[in-house]
Image (tube, rainbow, N blue to C red; front, side, top):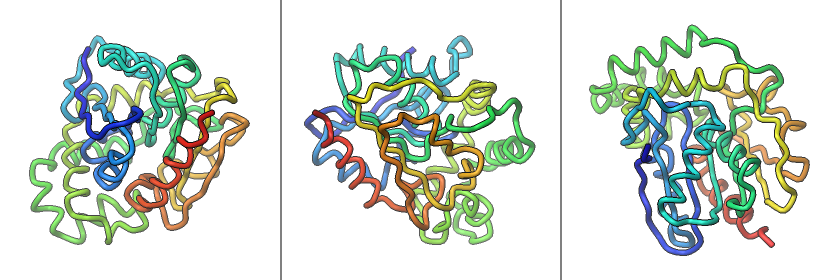
Length: 263
């Protein structure tokens, strides 16, 4: 299948991979404009997310999605790229580095999923309920997100700076979440799996987590022994599960620093 994509800027390719229930538009708005001044920025919508339709025949586990991204880059005749991913997108980026090292210049994982001690085995009640609520209300996001109670309900677990997030960010995020037909298939694709594969030391890897990440907390989901031994590991203060929203300037700086480490 083809992934919907947006290509902006010029220079060395840099691929952006969003997380579960997100989209390229909602995830990268705060950092894209700066990155495209230095790179050719390519963002994809995963199957059943954003502008990419859901295909029930597409395997949705992180490794299969990594293969799908590489096939899309083949169609675009892009041989090598830097990869930046948030949450599920971070896990996919790590899978790409492990399986296709010749295609990867560097990896920056922003709160990457898959680095957990014990793999998940089932959907949680709160996670499923949140998705059902979003699916029922996302068409009214523009009006709902004018209300502080609604913004808090939707984002206080995601971001310690939820009051400061630009309104267009949260409206886009609610619409992406509520309309993501691929949400449950991609979630189910993570069950009984984790990332524990070797990555060549020749590929620079930086992993960033926020100190207030309630989605992938440090106690259970930030196991450093599963990451490449050579990875730089950074904790951002006052930042949650979407550090590119809470700490955009710091994320941009670390992405650029990581890309500059390529030999």
